[in-house]
Length: 302
Image (cartoon, rainbow, N blue to C red):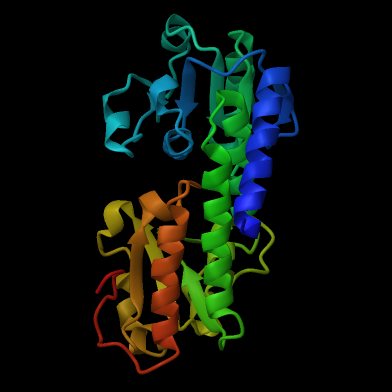
């Protein structure tokens, strides 16, 4: 038996024991969440959570989701209980959930308190790292009684390790990640997307900033001399968010035509698919180490 198979078997045994004992798991907020039996009626309050629940095999038990929960396709037909305007607490209560899984920083503390006041256990998920995603897969597996969750987590870690090994020791490439273009907003080194970059042997040019999300000016970006400019849009469709940089030919990324639009549905949701976005970025970063690309936007798969 391989080390990964052995680890998966041990994790599966631990998960089965946890469910049998009604074991408590600790969520990403540090709170304890305990179920006497596997959840049968689950509310998911972010698209990424919906993806994770389906990935561990608990999709059949999801009875309500947030807006934009569109992957896998089955999720599109589920009742939506939260939108940009807020959470429909009455609709959630009417669905009689026995577990609510929510995105911690996606909602105010007052809304989280209101969810807890409904009665069912609330699991708070906050995917800040690759390892936190793997742990969430395992914990959701415990809460849902999923026998497949340990294997999903093991496969996730194995694929991540393969990417790290492939790009370890490669010459570093400077990357600027744009969250918004007016004002110019970026991410610091504490964000998951910076870990994506590091996996590829790239460096976030603003990794040392204190806020997780920070506002910068064009002069700071020019001074950082990024070799790749990156943003993300749903489906990876280039909607021109980086076009404003094209007039700054002294930025290496602009001179070499490395203006990249990744798939936001993959990189932003904190689901298993973040590794698809990581692989796409790693290939682009590797290209930046070689001959310059043509002077046009570079997209994954091109």
